[in-house]
Amino acid sequence: MQLADRAYRMGSETAFEVLARARKLEAEGKTIIHLQIGEPDFTTPKNICDAAIRSIQNGDTHYTPSAGTMELRKVIAEYVTKTRGVEFSPENVVVTPGGKPIMFFTILALIGKGDEVIYPNPGFPIYESMINVAGGTPVPLPLKEEDEFKVDIKQFERLITNRTKLVIINSPGNPTGKTIPQKDIEAMAEVLKDKDTYILSDEIYSRIIYDDAKPFSITKINGFKDRTIILDGFSKTYAMTGWRAGYGVMNTELVPIIAKLQTNSNSCTNTFVQKGCIEALTGPQDEVDKMVAEFKKRRDVMIEGLNTIKGFKCLKPDGAFYVFPSIKETGYKSKELADKLLYEAGVATLAGTSFGKFGEGYLRVSYANSVENIKKAIQKIKETI
Ligand code: PLP
Image (tube, rainbow, N blue to C red; front, side, top):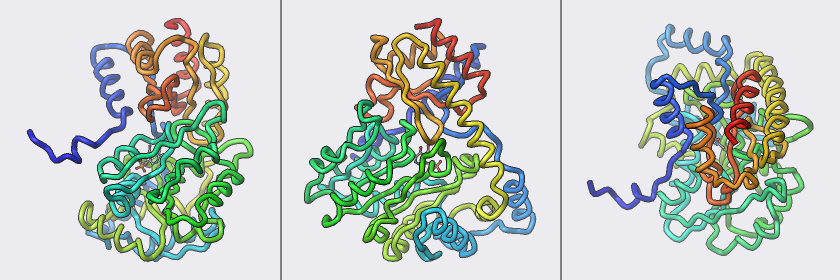
């Protein structure tokens, strides 16, 4: 087949490919501990499921407007206003099937040939993929272990040119689990202040935070609200990955364009899913608190365990549900070790390079699994190493 050039430029997410390989091993009778997972292993809270079931029984089975129902957009605007401390209205919101389409649509809407996009590396692989698909130039911003995976502001400044059209930030970040401190976001904003640059602020993990981490949205800085597209959603916070529900918050000039991309692709987000989302944001939040407390417990078990493995060194993340240990001292390359652990130890992890070239020398290990399985996996890794 001869495909269009853009199809050859498209990347992917290794998590799906590793899951397929792990499932194949399981079908052959092997036991695999899944630490490659990018989703909470909890079930969606019952009140949210009930709201969606009621909705389908009440006949909410038709299209909604492309940008989402006004009822949900209103609830999202109120939630984002409260959590970010910045005033937004329903007209700033577009509801999408998952947070990912906001990435896809924003990059398609803003980026063309010759436009440069600065994005975190290691970072969520779809950023780089979509920049390439859109014909833009990906400009990786290296996040280094020696800086605790924080942004090196001097380096960031050096990467900016008069072709920089978009900067992507992700806090708390996948795969490092690190939150960008307020002072660093302010320093980035200072660099961008007089530039013609938009910001895609991926805040999908903003509710999964530990210790005294305080996610800070760049929209709070004077002049940045209208230049920023916030990406957030229900997948991680409410254990709703399979529902496909997310949203973008942006200026009202961009909203009709992003909604039009939705009209051109999905038409709208599933109608009864939107009803579940209203319940998620307006109903009790104690299930979220319980999930975060459990993740924190697992994080501590994971870090302590990994740091006892020869050649592993693991920093303490303050958000999301991933750790990103250095495996440089083991002598293995990332992909080589991830494969060895899958086939020999029966532990599925992701190579750091799945998150970009600056991920070499690391593994991404998810703790969306029980304490018991985490302990078992650590033992198996130790024996294999
Ligand atoms: N942004 C980041 C950093 C993620 O890790 C993910 C999912 O893994 C997403 C966005 C997309 O989430 P969703 O499942 O809502 O599309």
